[in-house]
Image (cartoon, rainbow, N blue to C red; front, side):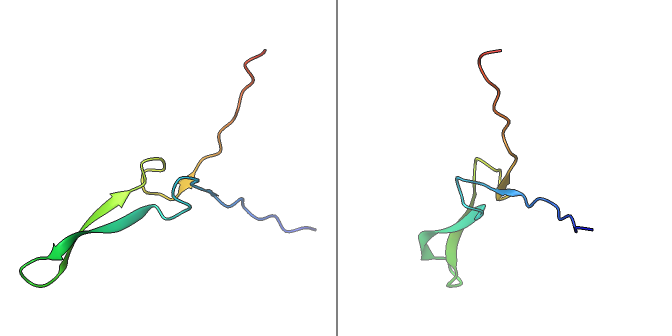
Amino acid sequence: MTDHTANSPRICPNCDGFAFAAITLGGRDSRGHRRTVTVHCPACNGTGTRTARVRESARA
């Protein structure tokens, strides 16, 4: 009997699975820490995966 494995989720093509990034704003705050902004991928909403799209034909 063969062993069935679950399908792995599709990696987002826009961010390649790296769903968010920390971008430095340049400079440091009063404690010496770098000021950063966390940005999420707009295509996958920060999950790193996308659902498979079902393409339907224009002709029926």
